[in-house]
Length: 257
Ligand code: APR
Image (cartoon, rainbow, N blue to C red):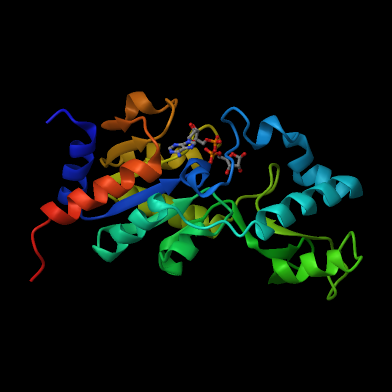
């Protein structure tokens, strides 16, 4: 069997616990640009503008940050076939969890269960106070900005408000890192979808899984630095191949009951 798609299908059929690890590439077919492809976000914005240090120190950077969040939220992006294929994996009882670097909330929108989604880099669905960690729906804060509050502060403690994402220089959520590491260690199949695998500690997850004995599949449009560690590599568009893979899994799986 040399067709990589068929190899992935076979690995899913044989697997008991599948971890899916997603990056921005799983959402580009929904219309959201990724970060490092040509034309991606870091070719249009300065990553330095998105560090926590700059956010705290520079009011103009905060305003630019809120503008980017407003564009992402108001565009009302929708899941694509890759997201729905991952929901299918959960429905088949194969999915241990989705570990995502994405903040777009599309795995929730597509229908994966909340408890099966680990958002390592947070979410734009909520804001957080940098002092007391109070959380609010982000749309409520964006409304305050539209009504003229250009640099929103926490109404409980006066601290700075920020989207509940993890910015460069900000601590990773320890509870989520622990959960992600545990799932990565315990799975028998780890599937990367749409990530360049260059940002740590998130990118350590496939290595943790591989070291613990899991099979590693990388589905990415372009080569990644971990391709040589993978058991199967598919260089293709996630929305196209994931739909085909799940269709074949459903055809070939032993019929339930
Ligand atoms: N199908 C498959 N792969 C795709 C698709 C697609 N439709 N579109 C893009 N890709 C691939 C690109 O080739 C690229 O290798 O997805 C990868 C996306 O890589 P990045 O843009 O680096 O995004 P990601 O890996 O998620 O970045 C990780 O970096 O800037 C930080 O916090 C940010 O969470 C982000 C982290």
